[in-house]
Image (cartoon, rainbow, N blue to C red; front, side):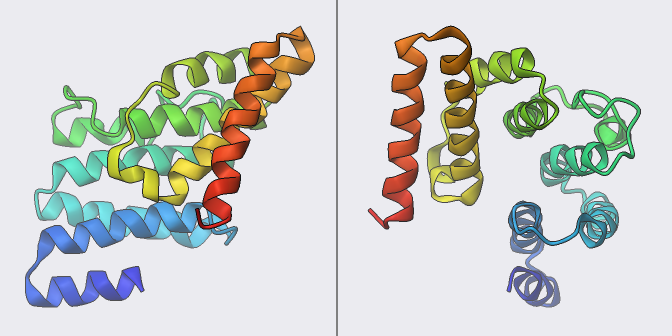
Length: 185
């Protein structure tokens, strides 16, 4: 559906709608459980188009998911670090990233990767930064729910390790928000 929206938008000359559809396609695909290979190919193709159409902001916003996929698929030198790698290095193609476009997304993926890789100190450090970000309209996305899921997992881990009631309370709070979303509330 999002690829169809992209195609129709491109045919109609609505480049901003097209790149917005592609960005949402990347986000959705990442959490779909479908193998990463097609998404890596699409990232290569569509981010090149974003550059061709001078859509630097959307290009920068796609780099974190691209880097995360490279890290998860073993195509980066340090899979535990989201700040360096082939995708993040592409910031240079648009003169860098002085405004931090996509930074919140990068930190969220990095938090998730740290959890997957068992680096709970880094996952907790990033959680403590990411939890205070304002999500705005993105609260309506699966990205927000994935973030909450990892918030709960990290807090449960920290409760098990420290016994701090605050961690247990936070884990339950995150879980309750997820249950509300799953229940359609």
